[in-house]
Image (tube, rainbow, N blue to C red; front, top):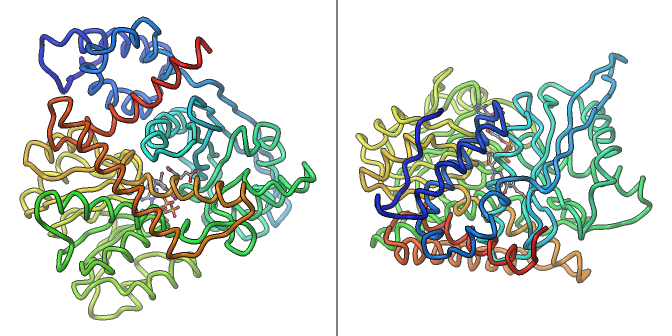
Length: 460
Ligand code: NDP
Ligand code: 2IT
């Protein structure tokens, strides 16, 4: 037996009492998948009131069905390095839920990837994608391949081998991958090329995050980070505040972190720290984003290099996360469980006002409680980082109509979608007796949309 759930509801809630046995069954059937257990638990803890109000969802076993992927694919990915050495990696694609549209979600290439991680990401994706209001189901994939230190030719051969198996499961109406950790424009290019070669189809809508010159959407690169900051701005507005002159700390320095930094700076904030897996850099005058982009996007370098090149203004702290740097707004944009209860306590002590998850599940459940109990505005990833996948859906829309929109138009659509997700989460939380609790609001709003479609589509 694990620790019992802590429902966000009253003790007399009949729905909440149904949840515990469901969760125990999920633990029993998905042995060792700790991140998946965590993601399921965080959602189930908030669903009690919905099940109390909607017994037809209980009768139709919607929770049991939504926690079981429609299909899980695991495959061998052999490839050869530049010296002719042979490597064998494992590929995954979890096609979790297609009630709202084709499976949609990124691919992650990182040595830590395993089935439990892909399932946690796929599970989150179902509700995130629903919240966007776009016609996309939930899925996720990836590999334990480590792209760090590999040449472009090696990455290309790996991507080609990965797609040689995965292509038979994809299609613009079936399953549409995109990027995530370790998968950016370069990898999407190689994956798309191999898909096209095998199928002999220029099926633009089969992958998103493509180059803007060959079917990609303007603003998709920026969308996750921009959207996360737009969501933060909306949360602050509700409290009569804004981002102007705020001190912001961002973790990570990849796609999400770089463009969260860019949007925060555009809105008048000073981003004073960012990080990578080697440590963090503090730059009290504000991160020089051109320099950071040059190091990270062009050079695939480290934040330690940034500190060195920036000179006296910045310093690097090895082997630690950035949460000890005092700030008004914290944006975890690196990876899961990177912000612990101890980090949260330090942030609260230093006066943090708002926290928004650019990454997926970066804040541990204990840390979320620390923020909520301290009255900090907290935005869960499935709401705050949904701008990336929403803009992927806009890319699919442009591909389907053989059109391409301007950056300004696409960014305006993104801003509308982020406002919509904010308002829906905020209103739903209030309607279910948890005002200001975006975790409750986002989970319930996303779940209700998916549950409705599953009910309508019968027992499948
Ligand atoms: P990138 O690969 O571009 O960047 C990842 C960043 O996080 C790097 O700075 C990396 O440092 C750091 N990082 C990764 N793993 C770890 C780790 N185990 N410990 C410490 N630091 C780590 O990925 P993205 O920016 O695309 O993704 C970041 C997060 O955002 C992920 O959680 C992803 O799921 C989520 N996300 C991404 C979206 C997208 O559109 N790309 C959309 C929505 C969510 P290092 O280089 O040292 O490994
Ligand atoms: O976690 C995510 O939402 C992503 N990695 C983006 C998925 C997508 O299909 O654009």
